[in-house]
Image (cartoon, rainbow, N blue to C red):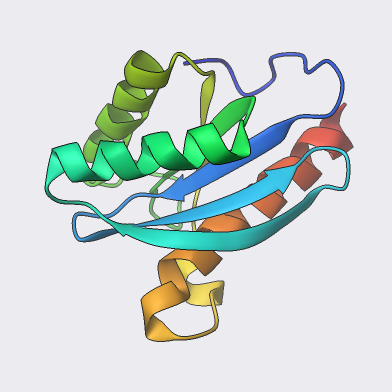
Length: 139
């Protein structure tokens, strides 16, 4: 995994993941436009099918980096579900050899609008858009 402030060279395509034990929301975005959009929702289980679906997305979209949401409480304290999300991020890094960044996902699910079956993808898009804007603003 990489540090959030690692330098970026040129435009970057990102895939973002809103990890859950039932579903994983996926969004696509890029650093050039700072835009992100919901892409799809994949089932978390079985594990082999999960990573097969992710592999297809990575092959299709050719991202340079991956982003995984890190759940924290409103006061910034670690959330118990942070550990499974961190494990998922390590698995992504190990399986696909891409830089993986984790970002605070507070309120992304609450802000997500749309059909129930796409809420997780919308939350991933909100996470990614917020991260891209923050990264550009801090540069």
